[in-house]
Length: 176
Image (tube, rainbow, N blue to C red):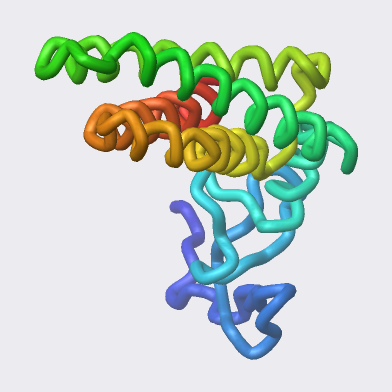
């Protein structure tokens, strides 16, 4: 006959979150084993991890210096203004077809500017690279606004600005 206990031992170790010591939990980080509550858990493709482990992993991924962000901003402003002027000249006087060309050329220009800005810093990344480059492209488009107003191509300018900024965001935030 097998001897089985008649009651389950109720003295199970109670874990408490390391960040919130008053919160009981049964969840642990799958990398470091630290107990954490559901508020502290970060869902990753390989399971739940604590915020410290996620920050450490992201710190290795983001390796840009302070000057890298400045270089990317300057490059994207200059190239955004040049591309805005060229696309504005292409679309000027063509009416609807000019807007259609501006739509496609703005997308291509934004993606190309994002790639050049990314390569200008030897492909180093920061957490906010996509914001800096998209903002630079937008500021570059704003620098060309007086020319668009004088030429009467304000709709083409708006199409270019929207498409170029969108393409830069898509290229750096989602495409890399």
